[in-house]
Image (cartoon, rainbow, N blue to C red; front, side, top):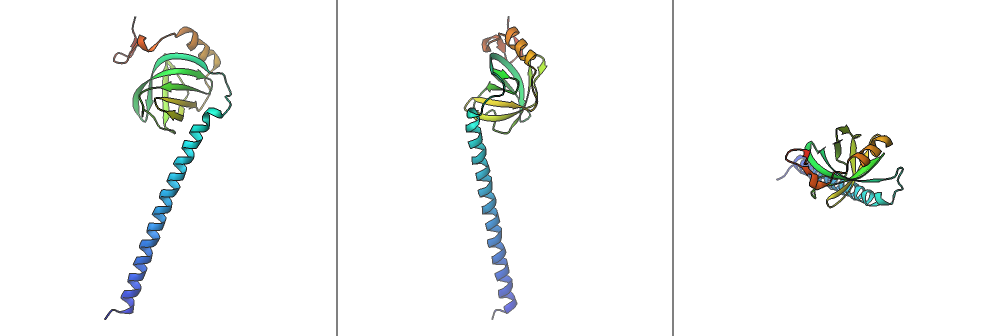
Length: 155
């Protein structure tokens, strides 16, 4: 015969398992909703008015994303951020980015959106307009002028 204490213990364990399963399911749903919200935000980044004019630029830049060295093509730049291009999957929304553009440290940045091989970087600080003008006028470097193995422009 089963004692009342054993039935009560089995009932408590069953309730604890159901409660644990409930919290795990709720946690998963919250994570999914947060990821969907982040994706929605990233997709709407293109409709947000820009605080500064983008200036076109095609310059190969050595950067760090998720503590990995990644060579990216800097497509355009403004005081508040830039657009970069690299192999698909090189970054995710929210990743931190460190870039050095022709010896000049860009402000620390965060990936704001990703579309295939292209991503938008939002700088945490501001890049001075004079530096951007210098980069755009002095650096007409194209992807073909850069050797990623050597990390220097080819003559």
